Length: 70
Image 1 (cartoon, rainbow, N blue to C red):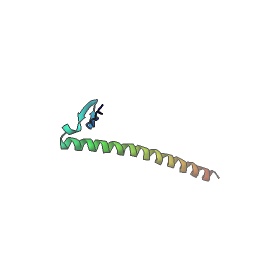
Image 2: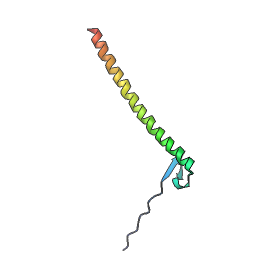
Image 3: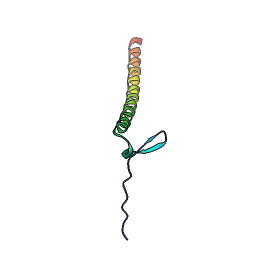
Image 4: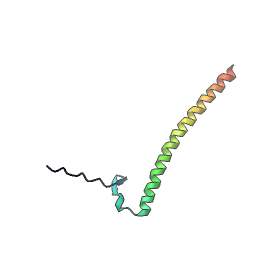
């Protein structure tokens, strides 16, 4: 029995619930997709960094208050 070769699925992007084949996009559209994906990563990273910064600030403010209280 011959094994069937699985076809590699063509890359797609989903925008507003609609799937688009990457191969059907223009170079400009691919650039836009790449920018949006990169900005999503940066937003996620920035939110993570903001949590760390806020936590660090709270920690040091608490240490300062303890120090001032004596």
